[in-house]
Length: 387
Image (tube, rainbow, N blue to C red; front, side, top):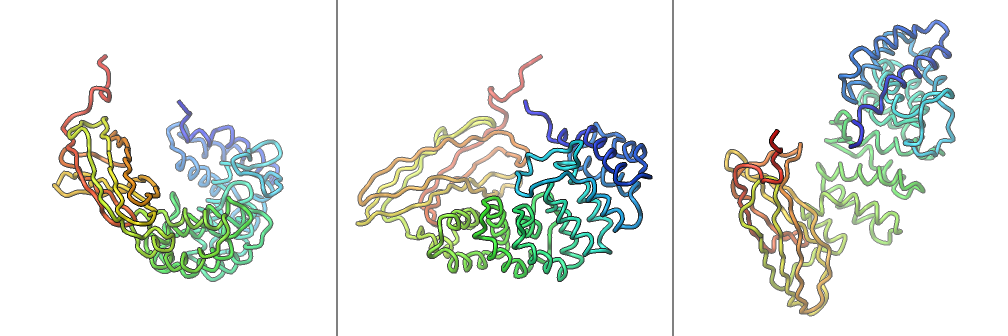
């Protein structure tokens, strides 16, 4: 079993930080910093550890932010600028990797009154870890100045800095604060994404895809228009980016997005769905068997997903779209597609007994449906053994 994620921030890293800040600041209260940072450390999860280390820095770094920023920059390990971040570690040469998350958090807390100096510091930080969380308060507090800085970073030689332009401004970045103004209107980001969508780094392009997918959740028409403008004649790298950016809207069956990808034609023919067994318990699976028959005179490309309408305690249902199949049906072809769908306990969903409907969606249209019943109690294979 892998070690808990929280161990990526360890007491050893706190001590590395204490050592390097002592070198950068002769009067740095190293013992106090380490004591504050490690208080109850074993019982803290990952983010709580990072925040506590940042609080310890707040208590021990100079009150003068420019002086504190200079000290942070002095502790950073030398880098070339294009190494994978996961390869960077704190060492006797300086700080890099997970411990730098706390340095960025410190800048976000104490640097808002010094935005230019803080953004310069985040530029250095993001080459050793990532400042995608730390830059977000500056977007909210100083949007004009921060977006001007992001625009200047579009041609930075470091892919980590260029990625920050996209990742840091994502409206709904996981683990980051929601940028509500950009959720309401993503326009300030669009020129940045256009400049980065053909970036030489796949790492940067992946961030652009995720950013566009964020926008799609609130403004599907923006991403549909983007595809209509940027997909025709696109090179393979951009097509891959745009496909990843389209994933939410393809699952939703958005007609403009499906049309942009040429997968909006309806199925001409018949479809039948069989769900077996009809009743299961939590921890078991059903097999989905989809029989297709084309009556078209030309081949048809189908992107097929299935929607499980999970029963809820109040008698309503909650739909969840699952990836199915991508097929090309020849004229008159019959095709059988099968898929096992497991109903197992997970942390992000609570299952309730009752009828769970399943709908098959092909190119955005429902073509078949079925259901299974989830019974009370767990399956024998999922029950804990008796002591």
